[in-house]
Length: 91
Image 1: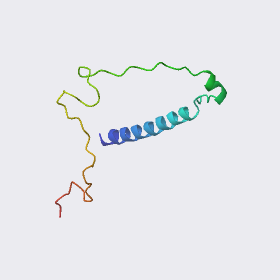
Image 2: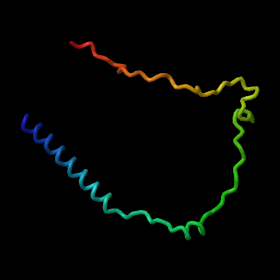
Image 3: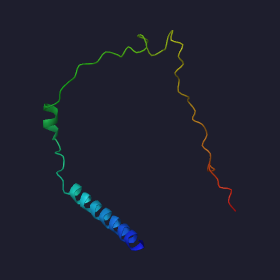
Image 4: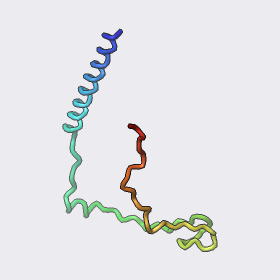
């Protein structure tokens, strides 16, 4: 049983390394994306129309007037501790 277990571990390790190398080789030899030149990129641009603002929560604007919601982001982040949070009580 120990021989089968050891052989299985070696088989998984060898197959993993080989599949990584084959995948890396395929990625390295794949076709690269075509870089557009500056002349063709200016000729092929499409201008999109401006979208109207989203009317969420009953058509309220950005100041939350009348909604009772206080959606604010704190300006100061909490202080960062220099000591690790998890400590072991080992000897």
